[in-house]
Length: 199
Image 1: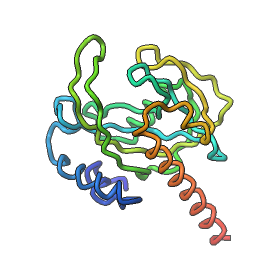
Image 2 (image 1 turned 45 degrees about the vertical axis):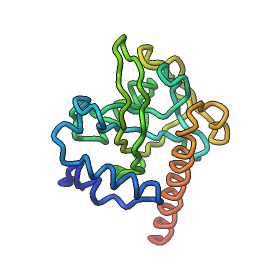
Image 3 (image 1 turned 45 degrees about the horizontal axis):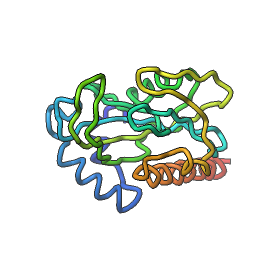
Image 4 (image 1 turned 90 degrees about the vertical axis):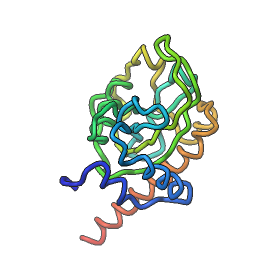
C-alpha cells in the first residue's frame, strides 16, 4: 500500500454497491487529467472526507456547514495534495478541533461523485461542478473539546446515527451517509471476526 499512488488506490478500489460502481467509472474518466487534484478543473475535482465515528459506531462527528446549511461530514478539497488520506485527517482536525482520532484503516472506505450546486464562496461565484470524493474511516472518543472553524462551519457535534435525517437537510447526502454507516459497521464485524480466527 505504501507504494500505491492515489490513482492506483482508486483503480483497485472494489465498489461497495451499484452506485459506487457507476461513480467509480465516472471517477476513472477524470483520473488521468493533470489538474483533477485542483480546483483549476472547474468541471470536477478531487475531495477527501473523514467519516469519524465513535467506538460503538452509533454516533458520527459532523459540522454544520455554512454554505450548505446542514450538518455534514468532515473533509475538503485535495488542492493539489496527492495523499488523500492526509487530506481527510487534516480536514477532520481543522473542522472539528479534535486532536485524538485513530484511522480504522488507511484503505478507502467509499467513493462518491457528488454534484455541487452553483454557490458563492468568500464573495466569489463558484459554478456547479462535481466532487470526486474519497472517504476514509476514523474512530474518535466523544469526550474531546470541539471547536468550530468559523469561516466554514457554525457548529460541531456528535450526532446519533438515527438522528441524521433530522439534522441533515441535504437529501442527496442521506443515502451516502447510510452507506458509510453500513460499510463502517461491516468493516468492524470483519475485523472482529479476523481477531477471533487468530485466537
